[in-house]
Length: 182
Image (cartoon, helix red, strand yellow):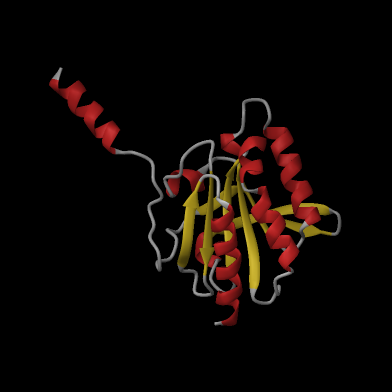
């Protein structure tokens, strides 16, 4: 009985929460099953994606569970990013789609929508994570989204799991603008 109770306490203490901090690099993670979508004409190929390759540009990174409702939560932020027309030499959006966290039976639809998004926004980095390795490595909540702003050195300057407020969205846009000037 004591072992069961101790195990329960341990499980309760391992609550979800991002395991990285401000002004630090993201923990390294590699997506091998699918990975980054690369446009080649009208066809799409895949290459292994690693978070250690994020430095070099200012980024707004979004990790999204493969669910329409989760994508919709922070779509207004994506719309604001597109409207800003950030300088592609200094900025890139990175969207990681967790296909492993899709509603059962919708994985094929999620993959199709991910490919469509890459074609609509060819300068964005789009990563298809079939096995949910990023969600597990970064200890992210299931059925949720994460938004992170990275500076050119790949250091976390903003992070938030869940739906963003209007003020947070403006903070993200303002921060991305400022970081591009540094």
